[in-house]
Length: 460
Image (tube, rainbow, N blue to C red; front, top):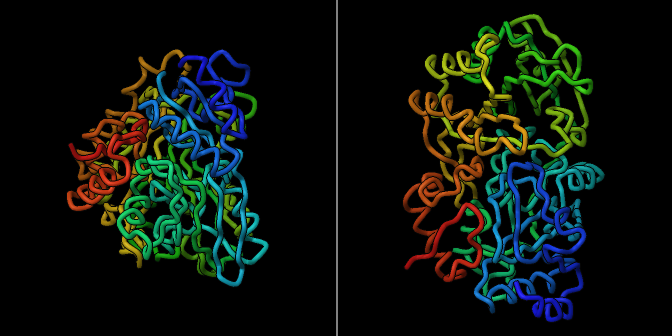
């Protein structure tokens, strides 16, 4: 990008304007999964709506694509040169209306902020597993809560209004009444339709949970997985859960019983009483010797303790699919790939139980489909940054076997960088939904300004 662009940007933007040769450029473009790198022509660190509008207009006037980076936690797609990147991490205002049970957040807000503010009002959001994850990007993809998802559905189901700067540089306040098609598309269509600057959504009167994790030795993986399959077959909607097969590194910060070994963790979150929760979880506790048991009554504000997600960035290769069921063939595939003697380079396999409220149509229709899926599965392989290309297929063996066992569909919540092709993205939606999304894209971004994402191209 020619340096003559710098004065025009500096005069119209309050936030930092960074070119590749500037100090701070690499930090501004950094992401949580360092397997993805961004090298745009310029980065605009937006401090508010006016900065976002200036950045979008700057890109459109020069026929450049515009890419958005909220907090850097999404499975983002690499942004090359000749692109304008807009970062929104400085837009961090949160407001909670306790009487209305709603929250309004700006584009750079993370879930940890919302969880704490909502708790002050005796409420809880449909937050993700990590407090560092950005609210807006998570919700635009659908949003699966590890604590309340099966009870209340996708985060996108409870969005009330969205402020978005579209490709023409206009700020639109989008509601079901103001623009039904754009409101439909934004919730589940990911970052295809503009830069979301603020979002309003519902909260829930939840103050405590019976929740936590049970960890088992890897040699008992088969017994634990079978117990989990039986557990999910009868779990009430108030019970949200997942099972994780993890090979932790042999490093000092890892608990000793996990270092360099396969462990199996079952994570649960129940909205009912502790007594009922204990009864429901008892078969899991009895499945095998328990290495660690953190399942207890906890404040809703402590939901991050259910998963204890890593806080430090690292490089990882991920692959996803959704399953219609968990048949013996799928369980056998998981056990063979991650077993104690498999020698697999896969670091983690995660199964999340869907169903419950995830399966129900929301009051305000949106683009999040695949509501009949029973489980979401993903593999993760931690790699050295220089090994990403050589490791890009790690985990696909298991995904392919799960597909053969009755899965294979994509889902907007579960799209990795490997799913960035138009063909893969299309598999995340049924045909009528995809056609509505394409129509909205054609209306609001006909030149595909927002294309460095899981892209839904406009028609013609």
